[in-house]
Image 1 (cartoon, rainbow, N blue to C red):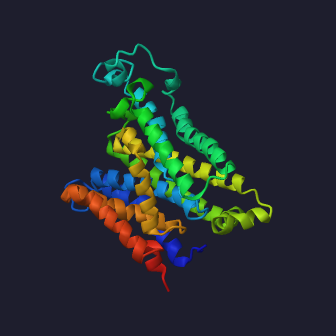
Image 2 (cartoon, rainbow, N blue to C red; image 1 turned 120 degrees about the horizontal axis):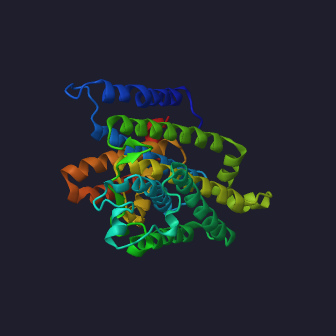
Image 3 (tube, rainbow, N blue to C red; image 1 turned 180 degrees about the horizontal axis):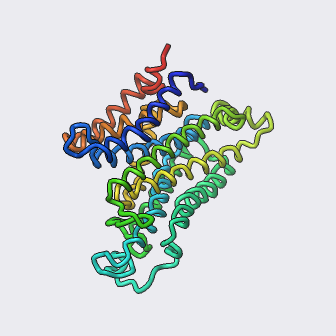
Length: 353
């Protein structure tokens, strides 16, 4: 379990300065005609990658430190996004295509009133509650049932992937009240502010950066605590941890639930910045990609998954523009190279002594 040294804290300080001071100045203070201006495109792209980094860090807490490979984190991320998306859809009001208080997709489907699951969805605090409680509750119930039944290893990985796939099929249905395959989009405002204004975009960017840094500090505190040492013991030799008197089920359920909540928060921050949420975010392929971010950066390091999320999604942004048909081949090649030649990830190469 690596400790942060002077270089690591210096890097965190530089990242915080860039996110909280430099980027806002370059985006809002520097004229668009200047070569130093940071465009809204880059603000959105970096903000999106930071949301992905939070998810990767959350997965690292359960995979890197507890040895639990989950391929269901894309579901928790999407549920957080849907919780925020419901609030954003209600904020459109009568500015939609059909000029109705109901979301446009409900008018199109000839719905006459909001379904029960949309109750209180016009309140921001309720959206935050949905984005955190629903993923956490699902993870708690699912994790408790699975861990209590001693499901582990590849079997646990498979059933988390099955859960994600089942949820995706459910949200694809029009009669569920979540927009079907189109999902939610065309957002107008958040907390009364225009969601497309540069000031709002930068505010969301700064909040996302603060959340990412807070998650990193929280993860470090957890992994350096007695709780984290027990998780490491479960990862390395769970039968021995049980023999020493630890109830490993409770530890695994706790870290799995916390990880899901962090994913929900990331999803809630992702949706207003990207402007859309649909069931494709729940696809098993997305959850597999999250695991690749962690593996590429360095599993069990906290900082590694952040690096991996940045590198892989940066490469994805390049390939999907320049060579869109080759991205999946490139992603597969990255994963193979990391697995064969960099078992500790990119961060392992950097920190190798």
